[in-house]
Image (cartoon, rainbow, N blue to C red; front, side, top):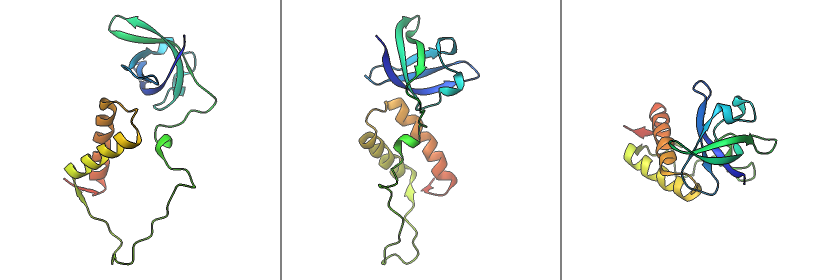
Length: 146
């Protein structure tokens, strides 16, 4: 019976990656030889359908194909729709429109709580990976004190 999930990561050069099953459980290894569509179609966040077998080192996907005609990007999935977006307007009591800069620890804590609340399907490893990248990004723009 086919399972569904989303591509966690796929390395085109090395020819392998991992799928996060929609039903939960451990991430599933996938090799390029087991893809039914072009490798370039398997970017992070792409919904896929696949079969699973027990490999030498854990679960292994085969007969992997992209679900549906559209492949969402990992970021697009979490962006608000146009109707949900709120334009930025400084409050009258703010004299310069600037915001407080968080410490790195405060930023990580706030980010972790947000990810757990708004994306409960993420694994601990995924949250850690996202936090690492977002902290680096926030440092680059001076959004956190480091």
